[in-house]
Amino acid sequence: MAWSDLVAAVADATERTWPASITYTPVSTGIAESISGVISEREVWVELDGDGQVSTYRPVASVRLAALSVAPARGDTWVADGVTYTVMRVALVESLLADLISVRS
Image 1 (cartoon, rainbow, N blue to C red):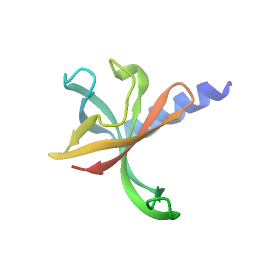
Image 2: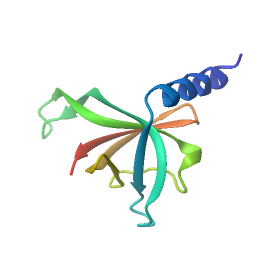
Image 3: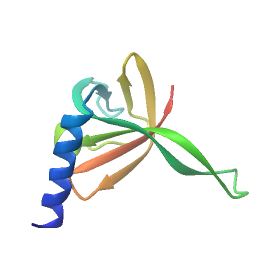
Image 4: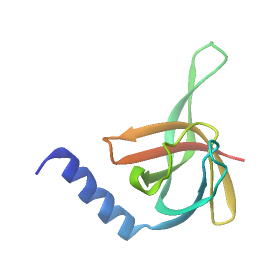
C-alpha cells in the first residue's frame, strides 16, 4: 500500500467516525460551499511580534482538497455549528487533505 493510499484510508475512517458539516467560503470566490470534514483543536506555535513564539491551541478543520473548488488560503472562512472561523494557515497533508488552522471570527 502506498503512503497516499494509507492517508486516504485514515481520512475515510476519520470522516465516518467524526463527521462535521462545514460551510466553506474561499476569499477568492466569495461563494459558499457545503463540505464535510473533521474539526479538532490543535497546538500550534504563534509568532510574538518578532520576539519569539508561544504555544496555543487553534481550531482546525481537516478537509479533502478534492471537495474544494479552489485551493484553500489564508483569509478563507468556514462555519460549523453556527460558529464562524477564519483560516490563518493551511497545512497540506500529502496532496489529499488540508488542515485549515483557524481562529474564531
